[in-house]
Length: 529
Ligand code: GDP
Image 1 (cartoon, rainbow, N blue to C red):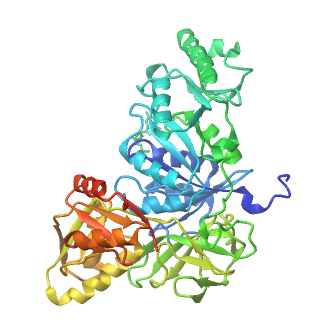
Image 2 (image 1 turned 90 degrees about the vertical axis):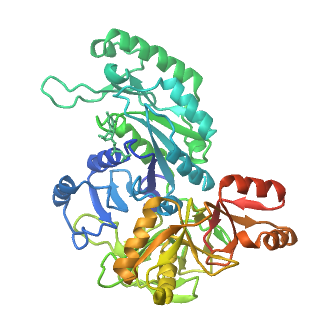
Image 3 (image 1 turned 120 degrees about the vertical axis):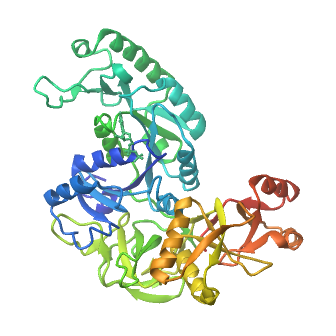
């Protein structure tokens, strides 16, 4: 199909950037946005009502406050594509949100610090990408600083990802010798040094790494090493195979420097040209294809109290099929009721013009009063349910301590609300009355207590519990499962959907229990029911 006749949704690139804190995600996000000028931001409390800004206003705002920190969805476009970049909160906001956001993207960029290699948080996020077969482009950042050897980094990444790598850009010197990046696919040199008048130098089209043009631009010993390494890299790694990448068997690798804008244009070009357009989404009874003639989507995030006076919530819906139009009635599958989407917040629009439509790959915000939960499906077509939106094993378990025992009922209601929003998980022990709450990161606990106080007027704190780990029990062998639950009743709880969860003081006890009950799977994640 030619570019003119292909449906508009095929130009959508819905993706996320995953990284360990400090690897350079924010810097890279800013570079990408500035490269093309973001046209719309979403999920930003302060920016409410400011959404009609023109690009220049936006730039000013960006300079004042920084961007990606507070935006959940950022849309920008180039001649060839419209990008929906979904933010995965890093350090401070680290929570299940991050994971769930990944269920709403079609591809991901993994940013790695060239001095550090793969770090713990990146690993966790990678697991989710694998679970969903999300293709990954690897960006090795900060090569302008002291970095590890390029081949050593590639070895480590290849071993961790367990898939083929294909270098797309290669550093021309690293650290103090850094002179720029060379695009091995398009044979272009991007020099790092500014030209004499201080402006950024143009890309230099070459015939190959041996092109004589480079001799005049790069120091001898740096060039020599680059040529040797580039030749070795081309020989040792497979050429870029877009299909293998989209199927999740290969990760293209770029070396670059977000700070110095090196490798960023090559990265965006890759997303434009080879990253997948909206993909079919797993659902029951069958996978939903973007070209289906009905509208469908799922909620991957709920953000409450964007306006504290109204207790409103905005559900972020990833559209998976059909052409959405404002005012449409969609069936809310969990309750079976129709919902007219009268006031969708469009995060996608052309400048200065509100688009009344959205298409597969787009994210729309639906204001509601708690009807919509993470994991919910909306559709205008046949009954269906999107699957695979995970709930993660909490890494911190706590009891909620209520200062005023008469507020127990309110606390219950608040916890249910917050669990629906995905802020915390709530577990009811099979023995005893105290509910336990579980979170993936410490910040969620702070968010919990602060929101209990400000929104629900409940004074409460959290206390340590004797449990540190939780696993969902899954088994086809119902008798074995029942037996295990009976035997371990004192350490069993139910999540809010009634699924059995085994609680333990640590992961050692879980491994021990799992070894003695081979017919049961102790799962660290559970699909949201
Ligand atoms: P995040 O936590 O992943 O969002 O990381 P940031 O984008 O905030 O970057 C962390 C720090 O690394 C900041 O001080 C950045 O200026 C710096 N940084 C990011 N990218 C680069 C790069 O390519 N080169 C160098 N030298 N520093 C960088």
